[in-house]
Image 1 (cartoon, rainbow, N blue to C red):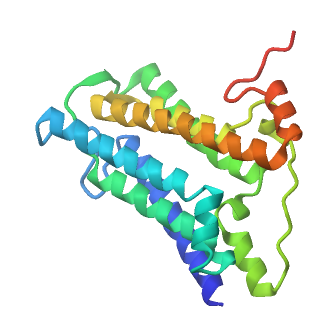
Image 2: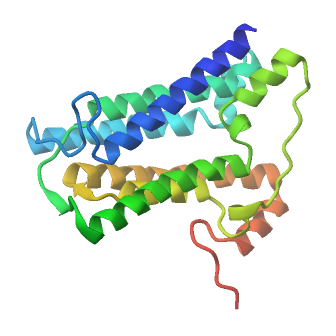
Image 3: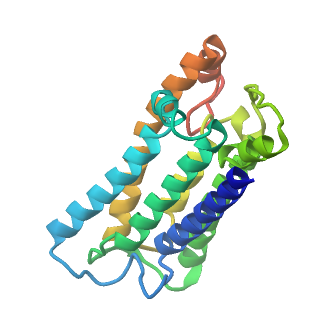
Length: 240
């Protein structure tokens, strides 16, 4: 029961962290702060802090996802709680980014009303929604550790999830990350602080996907190689 409750708690924290981050990136005031607030420190220092925050998130996200790390951590914690621990640390890292990110003065664009405002807002909402929906297309509850702790509670043996091409995944290999990139770059207001965050996180996404695809290719072999040949990473491949 303790492992199950732990999984529920980490899932809840991850959802709150994602919501806080999304609102913050969208320029909405969160506990009196917004990514578009006036700058409070020298630009160079603000940029340095922001780079370190993005690196912290990237290192946590990628390091804990590797098989070697999982093999080590499961020597100290139950295997059923490994994914929940990853989700917990991801949520903590996202909260740290959200609440310590430093504003930088200046705007690439700024819309408060009109067609451009509503178009960019619609794309912002679409991007984050698309990303969330894509998690349910595969297995949202396994991805966030809930399935593992529930199976452990009920004594159900874990089964390997077979590789399947469902819905979005028939056309692009990484719809979750595509949705995140759309959500990061399309917002009614694009301050230099927001632009830096979107750029750094996008760089991390492609670095993370490089290692993820290596792992998938190693695990699935020719199946994933053939999938890569047919299906684009972020955009559908045009068939000749």
